Length: 346
Image (cartoon, rainbow, N blue to C red; front, top):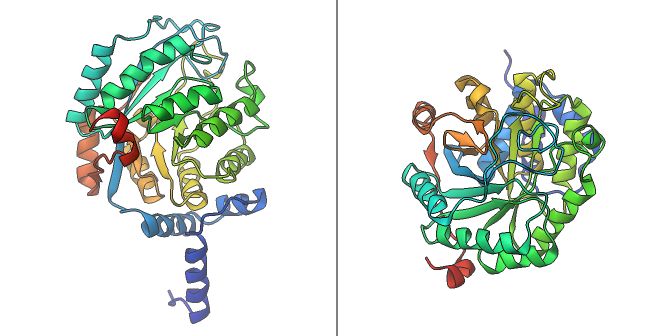
C-alpha cells in the first residue's frame, strides 16, 4: 500500500486538530457524516481526540448502588423499577445510612473512586433529600467522589446538593427527542433538559447519556448525541448504556443494537465531547471482552464496576481487573474538588 501523500497527511492533521476543539454547534449532518466514516477512520479520529486530553490507558471506575428500589411512578419502557410493570422486582425502602457506607467502603477497597447512588423516584421530597444528603457527606468522608440519580430536581434542591458537596448528578436523556415518546410518557424530554439546567446552574458536574438498542434509528442516535454535545456545557460524564432487556417491560424482545454500531456511537461521542468522560454503563454483561476493548479504543474511559447496576447484572470486579490487566489499563484515583472539602471533610 502506498504511503499517505503530503496533502493527505495535512488533511489528517487538520481533522485531528478540529476533533480536539470544544464545540456546541454540531449539525445533524456533521454527526451523521461521522457515523458514516469507515470504521478504522472513525476509530482513528476518536482515539486521537481521546489522547489529546486523557491518558489513553487510564479508566475511571464508578460503583452504582440502588438506595431505594422499585415502586417508581414513571413508565420508562426499559425499567424494572416502574410500578406499572410486573417484573417480579421486590420493592425496598430507602436503605439505612450504615448499609450505604458499608457498600461505599467495599467499593473503594476494590478500586472504585466514585460512588453513585440511585433512587427510584420521579422526584425526591425534601425529607428524602435530607437523608440522601447524609449519605453524600458520609461517602465523601471515605475520600470518594459522589454521584446521585434521584429523578427530577427543582433549582432549590440542586442548590442544596451543591452546598453539601455533591460532585455529579446523573439524569440521562435516554434517547432522541423525536423517539422519546416511544419510551416514556410520564415526563417530557424538556423535563429532563430542565433538571440538567438546574444541576448545571448550581455548579454540579452533569452526568447524562443514553440507552442504545431500544428500537431507535441511527438518526435517533445522532440526534441524541447532538442534544448532549450542543448543551451550553458538555456533560462532564456521558454514560452510554446498552439496553438490558427485562421481561415484563414494554421493550423486552426489541431488536438489539449491532455491536459495531454501539462502538461507533462511543467513538462519535468521544469526538463530539472530547473533554468528557465517556462511560460504558449497563449492558457490559452482554458484551464480549473484545467488544469492550474496541469501546476503550474508541474513547471510552470510564466504567461502572461491581456485580450490580441498580437492578441488573454487571461483570464482577475480578473479571474487570483481569480485563484491565490484559489491556494494560490502570484505574484513576479520586480527586475531590477543593471547595467541597471545606464543608464535607477530607
